[in-house]
Length: 95
Image (cartoon, rainbow, N blue to C red):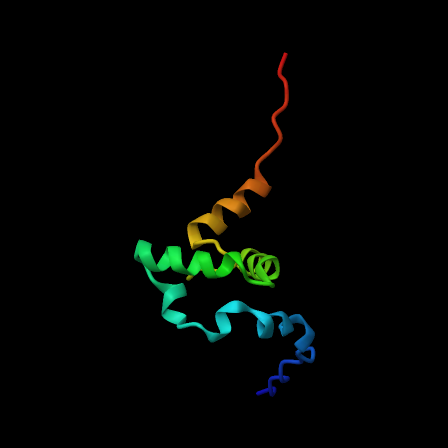
């Protein structure tokens, strides 16, 4: 029986994740960002609004299809809507 070749993965690039070190949420209770109730969702969004890495966080969550929590000030359903907005076909005129 042939031996399986080990998976050869590229080296991790820490610069791709360094933005998380500057995130406002690093010093907050993580449960605020993963709550299903409106008061905590509002609190999480307020914290995100003043975060220096808001755009990077939002982009990461959208492109990685993050299914849970508030990321970049958006809920999972808001991120899904954002992704679908890019996929909509342009309207064309018909004769």
